Image (cartoon, rainbow over all chains, first blue to last red; front, side, top):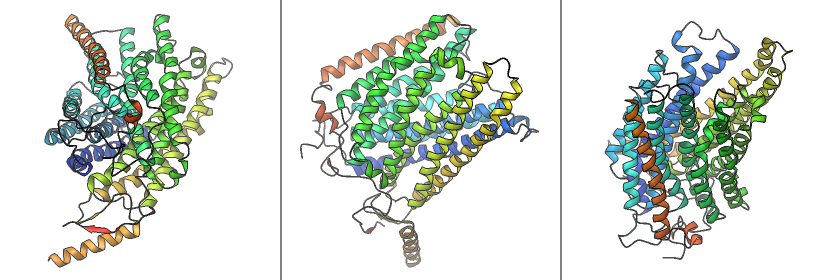
Length: 494
Length: 71
């Protein structure tokens, strides 16, 4: 083996990449397919919520679609339905590849995926029926939550099994993040549910627990998975090791130490002891350390390889995600400052920031992972380069329009609200055109998801013909040729 | 009830904290932080070595390959 090859551990030979991918095909496809379904549902619920803010009569006659119900469904289906399944699929495939082992317990994991989807469905129906708990990000009724937690236990078991039977001798930086996610997330959910919906604490302490969870479910679940994906995909696609492996480990450990403290900045101005807010602000400012180290690594690795953005769909989404990670994290840290919040707190600015992070950073890295892995998992090829381009530009423009419109509207809204001479309704009227822009941005994002879904449905269709090397062949014309050849084969079989 | 929930949360947090410290000590002992340059290269191998681009838009790779029939 060459000096760049993996050293093997004495336990045995590494499982070939193809074997790893084949073992993951069904499990990971089910998780990612359901993530796309929930992304569509979440976007649809988001569009309805958005439309109601500039056109209050829109679907106004249906109580189950009132803003107080559809908006939590939007966020919960986005973070659990889309985020949970996309991140779980990513975790399983990436860990299997890096450990050079087959995915263990495939039936259990598939059953877990189905149970998880049933949980999200039941939770969403419960909220639409008016059974929301009222605790942000934990709105699902209590009967739905075990269905979300139990499948994750299966994932934790599979993850540890892969790691402790790994054939590779080195723990790559992505694996640090993936192992950490499986330790952090169950603790987060159980502790937050116990503190809020099970009533261990009440009053303002419950709000602290709520926002400790609300912030960490993004930072200690979605973010580490997406960073793990970026640390694998960017060097792998361009064929260049990451810029500084030292920095990558510093980034991981500083992220692990500081992120957990940041949640209370959401409660600035609330009836809490000042030190609890200050802890959140300090934790947020300390986040500059991991963000800068991760940013340096991702962007410096790309230096000299930016021309590949023209030719690689995976790289486009991965680089968009990593760039927005740097920008959104800087924005988020600054946003925690009291002086900043004097203007932006309780305005559309916060909504702009959240969507910038989730749709500009997390979602593109999950898409990048799917674009890279699906051809390798299925042995088929993406059917249309055009649809991939549509998906990319819709994601980029939709996110930019959304975040730009909301952040600008939020700043002006905050400045006007701080001026007692301006009537409140004038401020509402001012934000209306920006709320329309948000709905348009949502429609653009929705269109991009549809384009991706068409490609996704085509790639998971069973084909008699398989490509020798994924992502190195095929155009839409070739895809039609493939279908034609397949029908000829079927005809000959008859 | 609330007392037991608190015990549970604190026990959980303690286990998590101890696990993280143990993991760090274990990783140092295993030599995970030695030879980091080699670690960065661990995702490459003979089939996909350093220098090889592994992703293109469908149909736009410099080297076009043929369809393989797997029946």
